[in-house]
Image (cartoon, rainbow, N blue to C red):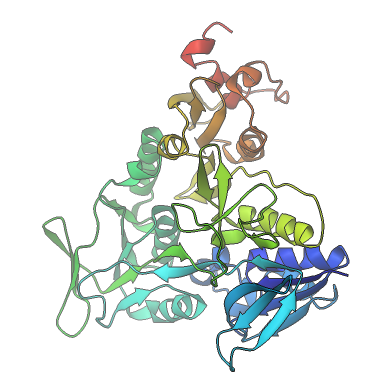
Length: 434
């Protein structure tokens, strides 16, 4: 029976430990905190629907004991090293306690990287690193009228939307490049329109970053791009930097442990999943920083650490509703595609909704020589219904040529007879008239 160590008890670690145990491995999960299975993706719900910390725990975490996984809480791993043919897990404290295993899955996630802003230490500044910070903000909203939010754009929009619904006047700062820095121009424009039409129940969107936080004794205003805006509180949303014990593994340009499709690192027997991992793709690598990639990567890593021969197929897909707009993204942006050695181009289309005032927007990123579809962005009417298809297109590595004549489910009443994804593929210059 192989002995498998899983280091880190977030989503990827929970799924890795369960996969290993279900294949008959003697699995041990090490978690540095006292709570296992907390999903960071659920934390904004503490603001929108009053969810407590217990409500952030994945249901699968409660299956660990029944599956035979030994869970060791409060055990922070400092290093993983090979000794006498086995992998040794070394504890950071308690005299460097050690335990040996046949294989190890590293799934320790990210460490928060807080934006450096002058005045961030003032009372009234909330840095949302974890559940306790979200809880503190939720409890303090009764005395807050005007809030400035700054951080990763999509998370900032979700947090800003939740705060606006609870009665605060919210401004979300979208960074120097604005919404267009992360989304296609048509989608960014659709979100801006929705924010304006939402009135007091939606956050205001501001192009720019928060340069400094002003006030005597507490937050009174923020400075951005030479202007000053009054506010009672500032919410700073950290970025995440991959965090993991020293294991001697090769690292990617984004700081994660490089893994192949089996989720194995450059060190035999050491696997990585979740935010700790960076997946090799074409001539480069892509961070694995979504719940969906954490689950798939964790399951494959745990299975292969137990002697399996599985491979992971990633689409890096996310589907959510932001500011009342259905939004789905899958795969890479044009800039990301270029960074992994592709020669990308983008084609964008808008489709009217039958009997609806809205539109469906599609942005398709493809590699010009091969016409591989490496990225899709959909927004608007019925975009959520296309999310699974977008994920499959990217995850299976389909080319635009195959999409042109791909049958779509018959849906009476649609303004068009084919899927918007298929119709967008037809707009690629090399496929005109296909």
